[in-house]
Length: 292
Image 1 (cartoon, one colour):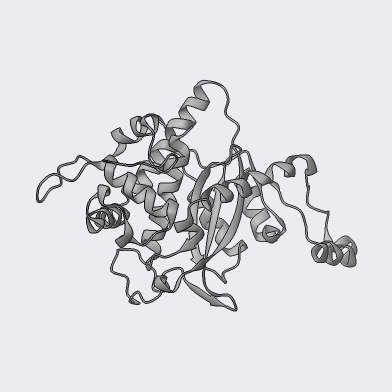
Image 2 (cartoon, rainbow, N blue to C red; image 1 turned 120 degrees about the horizontal axis):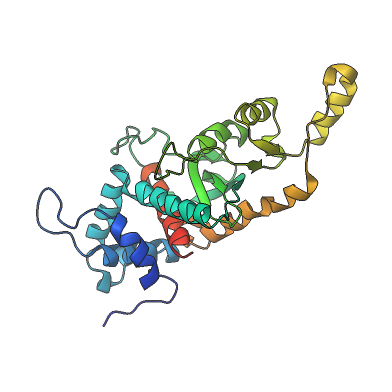
């Protein structure tokens, strides 16, 4: 008898949104794939609980088959394309209802990497896999940093992963470049109305980047930057505009991070490759966006 834990498997409503976006069940070579829903439920179960692949319950079938599907769809971009399609559907619905409020918050979080995440070969077996596998060493051991953008309803819009010791500001342009929501007609939507970020993103380069794109920046200035500007007098220029009331919405990205870290297999990284770990993040985004 199949036992499904509440909150760990896809609901019927979620499946109805996701199923049309998945590849055909008959691959180019070999026989038919196992049922997509069963496989996705198995992957969700694994990352929600954080169990080893070999401990996947028997009713999900062979764990190797489940992992192979995760790996293949990570390599060909299926997870990311489904995630992007759900964003586009939500954006089109909000636009039609006149409820479009594209306020984006950006932040990052560090996750510990388990010892099982180490040991992947330097030259990645998957296309696009970085040699460092988004693993970094610090006093805390192996870590990975997740950089993300979230909308005003605490839903992820883009993910970028780097080694844990990497700074927040250098990854900001890459995060913003990945915020692309396709539309039925015309170019993808890439320009939020407002971007909220904390003091780690207060740099001249980031403010210039946003200003050139016509995006309003709501970023506080650190004490040292304020003191340096005042010390320079007129040469220091005017203080950057800051909307304190608007900044209160920045908690949306922190709440989005909390949602993601409810998945124990993401709160601690067990995957050897950055490609697979990023695919799991996109799966989390699929789960969040399909539950709307």
